[in-house]
Image (cartoon, rainbow, N blue to C red; front, side, top):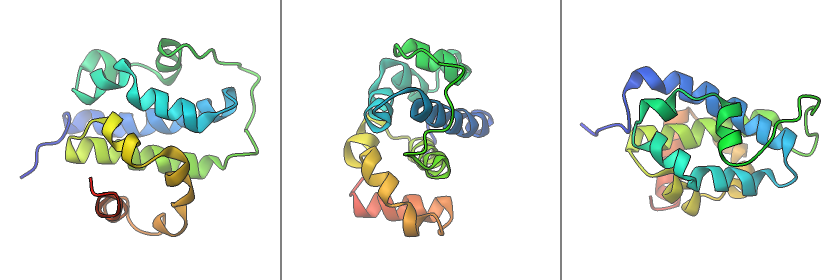
Length: 141
């Protein structure tokens, strides 16, 4: 049996956290794909990948602050990016990192955010598990 990146008790909160984080990134930055990539490669994310509870328990706003992004409370939905797709992307990245115990940095190097965004159709129709398996094969991860 494969070892996951961290205890299952953190998984659901990581899914919720990353969904909100990706939406906040889209609402508060001009280049969300670039910022998502920077986040996935950050030291903060590396500590999360190692299962450090101190980092796994931070809020999305704390995470953004740690990478130098200030939240604008009045920022609304960015019509340029579909937030459902951003949530799906967060699910895929979180699941792949957790399930296969991969470094987020390696995942985002292989599956760039803009590419993943464009793979929503038709992959979103597959279960998260099947979609992740397909991506793993397509990108040779």
